[in-house]
Length: 313
Image (tube, rainbow, N blue to C red; front, side, top):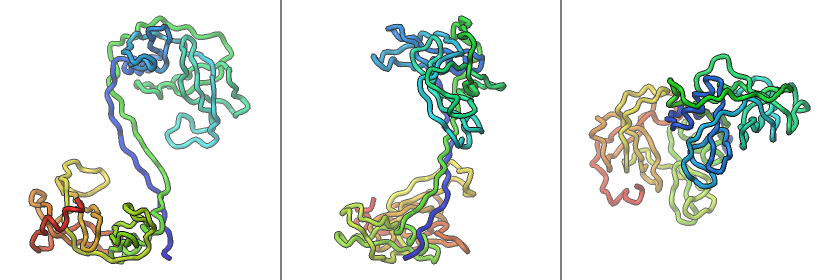
């Protein structure tokens, strides 16, 4: 049995979103060291504010300032902060109900250890030195033994409002492809494409998953497929990825390798992008030392008849 592979994997992307009037006022307020909530028709003040009442679903937009001091309603200790979290040293995640608010705001609480935190403790906002109109303008909360803070009476209207934000999403994890795909990847490094046949329906799946997606039974019989195949569907990519040295536009396609009952995907090269078509016969192109085909190119054969691949669309 081949060694089961594993490798670190990072998925990240910037998510850009526009803000409505309520969220715009809230984040702009943080930039100006003002915490704003929104008042519902039944008199509750929600912090952070929302645009629709969570009980009645009616639109709400009556902004009201609350104090920068509050009370911890519940908490959890974070003994090993991760990259991008508010503090580099261990801290508590706390739900804080600010004075004047009826709901709690989640943020970091800077204390020396879990023994220094308790439900009901009084805290206050510690503002970031540089503020841009984001939740990180609150650097964290810190213990506060003084009197409750007082709102300044701000109206919630600003001249230079924040109208959009960019949130950088990132997921770090260790990926293991499992027994079946480890064998598939190992064979790819030998320039062979190997799937697995279902013992029930006899279909060959590439890449293999270790079980038949139709019958639900385990698969183990290895079957070499390809190397040639047929383009079933495709798309034209017009946006350049920063980590790929490929000029746009280019074509990414689903390719049904000969002998396989499931199409895999790959880039099509060696042909103008506007000449790629369904039924195009292709073969893999390998680069020296690569663990997988760099792209697929036309074989020069006549196009495959639609009936031969229609079940693989």
